[in-house]
Structures are given as C-alpha cells and as structure tokens.
Length: 140
Image (cartoon, rainbow, N blue to C red; front, side, top):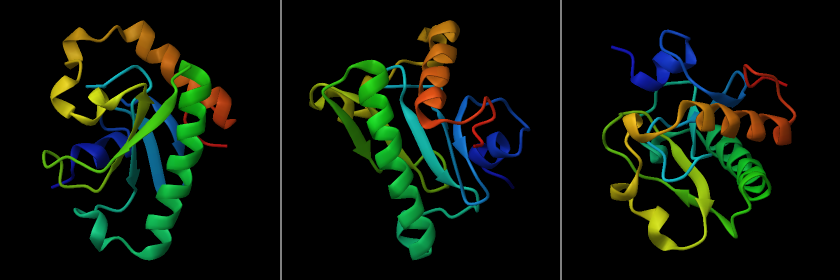
C-alpha cells in the first residue's frame, strides 16, 4: 500500500510542490510549524532515512539546504529549521521550516490542517518556487 507521500507524488491526492525531480520531491506539509514548512522526501518509498542509498540522502540534503535558503529569504526568518522526525508516515522525510527560536522543533506546535489559511499556503508555495526557479509543478 502506498504512503500518503507517494500518493501526493503520484498526484492521487493534492500537494503544494516546491520542487521535484525523478529522485526527490518537496512539498508543503498540511500541518506546518509556520507557513513555508516543507517536507523533502525520496520518490522511492523508504521508511527510514538510515536506509536510503547515500546518493539519494546527499541529494535530499542538498535540496534541504537550497530550500532552507529560500525559506529564510521568503519568510524573513533568522534561520531555517531542519528536523528528521515523524513516525506517522513510513516514508523518510526531512522537515525544513522558518525558525526564529526553538519552538519549531516541537511538532506538537503545528497548525492543524483546518487552522491553516489555504491562500497563505498557496502564497508560501509560490514564494518558494519562485526562489527555487521552478514551475507550479515543482519542476525546473
């Protein structure tokens, strides 16, 4: 059975992509710490980041650094947070989010999906795509 992330990647359920290629995809989480909170996932379903092949892991981290820079620029945060967490979805992923303090490192502080403003989510995705130089589908 496919993970929810695979369903987003395959277009079976909607996602706000900020980047994608044949190896990795990055899209906004529906329960963000702050607007711009992005998940970076391998296209292949691999549960644990420790089980990823080194090239995919390196690619994910390279992308995390680029998205982190875009997050700082787009949202004016002092830093970009980086977190490997999440047992809910058995698909490796990196969280990158605007951070001005340590509160973002607790996923207990997320906005629930029904609390987010869809327009602000769309604007956040567009701002990141613009800075990353990709189209609406996340592809260069």
